[in-house]
Length: 89
Image (cartoon, rainbow, N blue to C red; front, side, top):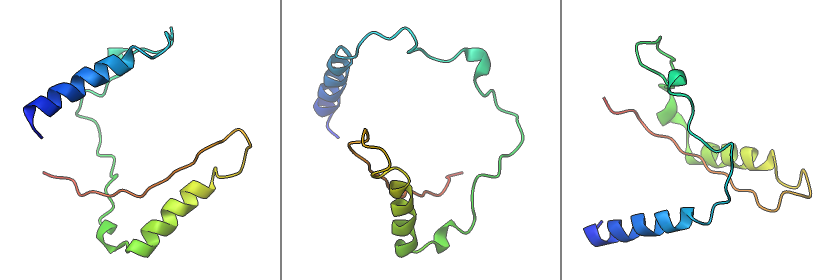
């Protein structure tokens, strides 16, 4: 990414936030609630992640999409995806 493009992106992102309606409930959480580290391991990494084939990934994404698609007439758009990554140490 070129430096000029990054600056333009930041400028446009800042300008876009001006279109947000004021919301008294939009705020950052209390810092006392932030994770400070040192907690127990959550074991959220599935070591079998690399065995999930493309067909299964598509199936999982479609299942997520179908949880909402055409379930309520007020829903006008639904999208889903499958994303996996390996942690870097």
